[in-house]
Length: 398
Image 1: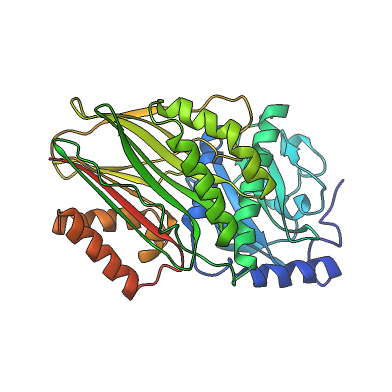
Image 2: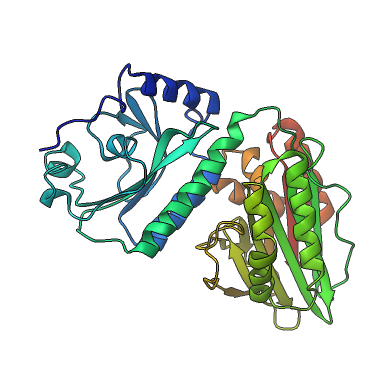
């Protein structure tokens, strides 16, 4: 029977010490939940229909649960020894355990025989740096036995790649951050609606992008965020903007499909990706048809005071499997309704979670004039530096 973990997983082994040093350099353990990781675990739980999904960071002897989507809340830290994730760190690739109770290697583990009574586990190691040091895991758990087919495993690995790239952004604090200030959309007039936006650069250039234009009477509206910072991210954002403007009349599904084909290879070569929300509004009916590629940062506020956040179930451009169709969505903006679309930096104005979207919504209700609202957001950014690029777009129906 498999007992404990191998010497590379925990304690004072060279591998464990090296891993702990790299984790400290990444500077992601402290500070609580971050939306950039929450999005990944949300998509993982929804895509696989499991009871829990977790993104874990492994130190020498302790596992930190950086992000979790589950009915029961665990952690934030647990001993690394004799955990599924501790054993996953010792594997070259994914680990899939269809039924832990029926597997002699795992049947005696505390989390199998005790709460949370895990039966199914699947995890991938997360690697960072030129030497590909394994610093954590992205995993799924469920109290019922189940299996994964090859496509499922491939999707879990792609989500792991997304997590790795997000982790890697913390390894270089000198990367420049900002927006492409010269690539701002021109004002448009949409009868019955008000539209405005702003970008606050944190550095010189970065990958934040917002764009709108009219095609006939239809309004096309996009916000995107290229992973990474500096000149490379700015160039990739410019590439995406050019591809958008080259297809001014196409519906969102075809636009994103074209970007998956045209821009994804460039993103892949640059070891980057881009989240995106793009939609087409019919002003007469208020219907907005959209595709959300891993963005999930759109707040819909209704005239009656209700609000909801539009979450994403798709992967970003550059990580979405080739040939796989995208999910589409639609909503109706009734008179008095408002959409607020943001990049990650807006979340950093408060607590780095989706709760920050509601805080933005509260600011809007206090100041429902677009210019005045955006001025208050700028003032908030001066008082509470988001440490990231900040883009906010507002679409309001009168």
